[in-house]
Image (tube, rainbow, N blue to C red; front, side, top):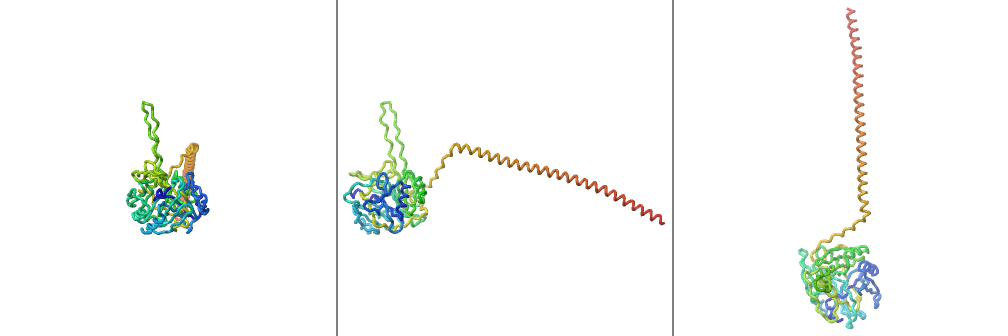
Length: 434
């Protein structure tokens, strides 16, 4: 591999973390990565999968946890000088990696931190991996940031996507291959959210998000579908480092084969899959020009035909120091990866219940209904009994009143008779005296 092959491509991704063992366990569960000590420096950990090396991991020197992406350059010293001339800062001056090339860490004028790396001149077998599908810069001025990186790495503007009130999303790359996007940070985005966010490829964004939550991480945005058909989710690991996942768009169905009368030809080959990125341009980017032993680009551009994956360095860069990048906050940022802020997808429907369980439901409902009816009937029976008792009491009361009236009438007559007799006797007495 020559230095010309790596110019402007993302070659390496490195995690500085407060707990390498804990972070290694998290990424093993979420992304299936394995971790092992670097043979030339046991304090540095290499992350890998079945395809090869994915990135590196080290103990954070400043107590923060964050990912750092490295871009390949032909001349490290010239790149550092250019960055300073354009208003950038040098966080880590150029340094040697034993048998592994040279690197430096820079900050752009808007404080976005990025690494630069020059592989060793001897070349060698590069780690064959394209596990990072997209690179996204959230900055205070994406136009100024693009001008800085264009002069620094030779990046080209692939396309501008209008997000309406949210502003513009600038897609960048080189030789027609799309590497990622840039946009202005919205006011709602917390200041501690990283400027550069890296997206790792996964078979399922939904499963990766569930695994992250189960492994102690926090899903802050998504899963959601973005233009181009891919699905993304943004999250933080248990130590607070922000990372995103990208589920590429499913492959297209095989082309149909006609049945001619003549001897049938061989079936047509299936259509090429469409690698997805977090934000897909409307038109397909042009393929990179062919070159001897050309490495694959780091990010597959979202196009009808698959693009080549980026070359990784011959040896993994092992920085001696890391920038004091801000810790990602747990609060969810604005949808950084979505070009047009698509609505979050609905949660997948729960699987249908088993037939036995479904059969028990009507019986349970009928039992409940019968119980309710019995309760109502019992209440009605009590009400009827109460009404009968009231009627009987009323009848008894009427009888009592009649008896009282009869008794009162008889006594009245007797009293009147007695009273009349006394009056007659008194009258007779008076007459006798006269």
